[in-house]
Image 1 (cartoon, rainbow, N blue to C red):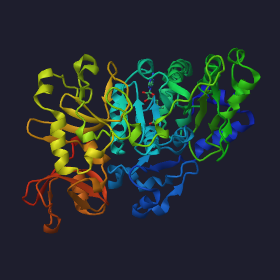
Image 2 (image 1 turned 90 degrees about the vertical axis):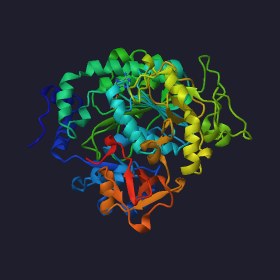
Image 3 (image 1 turned 90 degrees about the horizontal axis):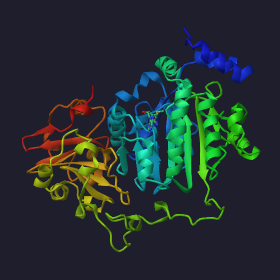
Image 4 (image 1 turned 180 degrees about the vertical axis):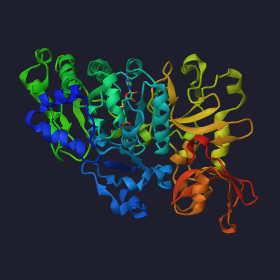
Length: 531
Ligand SMILES: C[S@@+](CC[C@H](N)C(=O)[O-])C[C@H]1O[C@@H](n2cnc3c(N)ncnc32)[C@H](O)[C@@H]1O
């Protein structure tokens, strides 16, 4: 019962691989591998292994220290820990590009082709809440899943965009320390994981994808800061979408160079010999040979599906080959001094800007094209925005429920009555389609502030004034995740009325509201419930 590979694909791969082709073909007879990656924004890997019911059957993914192969029958997507964002289910080879990007806390990171967000959540975990992640996809529908996964992972320092790379480059030229281009591709490496990719392959030709990749890469290069690193990756085998793209980039951008990836775990070298004559011509021998420093993951040589990745660095020199001063990145600065005020000026160490007290509020409503809030799809009316002061409403809520909120770094940004905490130092997003302007805190109403589900998911248990502690294997947990009201045992009654952070195994899973009658009203939004 093997996979029926398209004849054209078989023929091409046979030509490329020669004697190795039979081993490659045999890999399609072997079962695919399943992977999950522990979300270290929420807990440490060993902590997860202590509480996970399937920990004993997990085996390590060699290239990602917080990731594991799991057995199909364990179905980790059907466990409360999944709803608490404790891990992301991700194909093991797909974890490699974010590993190669070498993100450090405090970096400015762009994930340009990001939906549904697997690599974004991985990059966010590497940032550990410091610096900023701008995550984007040009497909509007797909940004819904992207935003949801970023929120489930509890990421506090991300901006989600729905844009073409050219539009982002106009705002963020030379701005990012790290850029991931996980490009749209013909998906040849995914045929074993998902057979529907074969039909997709017939539709999306290698040629069409190559043109998109070329365009995306040009804009990505423009957004990279000198000294910054860009990782280009695909899940396909065709040289036109891999080594050819890197050759073209090297020819067009003398300031970019390949950083060789160490070949471990059965990874294979990139193939400069597969690059067309036309693309080789403008390259020096040395630059052409450097393409061997990119990496191919073949399913017959490694424990995962087919992938390609290239690590590129922008040199710290200008056109005249003179070194240029390295921009001081956020990572070099202590937390407090890395903060910037609303005009993008650095604030002095002695002038912290506590989020809860930031009154330099700017309505992003005009930044949303067509005067719409991309989050709700609702039309924004100036009067509505003027009626409630979202900051005051938030402050009143936070002072009663979130004692440490005034210390959270970032500045408050409102879209109408919706309030976000945005990382410091972001240039104006006016004119861009903004899906999330930061960590979505909630919505200010006429009489009270309604905290959002993403706020709950981004919290630590100890940050909430009032919590309900559940265990993952008790029946109330499933009831809560299904959206039911909970009848609380007397020893679990909250001390006061109001919002309660519901936690499972000490990890937040959403809000409940207690009105003093022994019942906890469920505040889990419909789209987040257990199906
Ligand atoms: C391979 S998928 C990304 C997978 C994602 N990085 C992850 O790890 O979950 C490629 C994505 O690129 C998006 N895309 C296609 N053309 C694009 C463009 N011009 N700009 C930005 N994103 C684009 C597609 O909508 C698709 O979601």
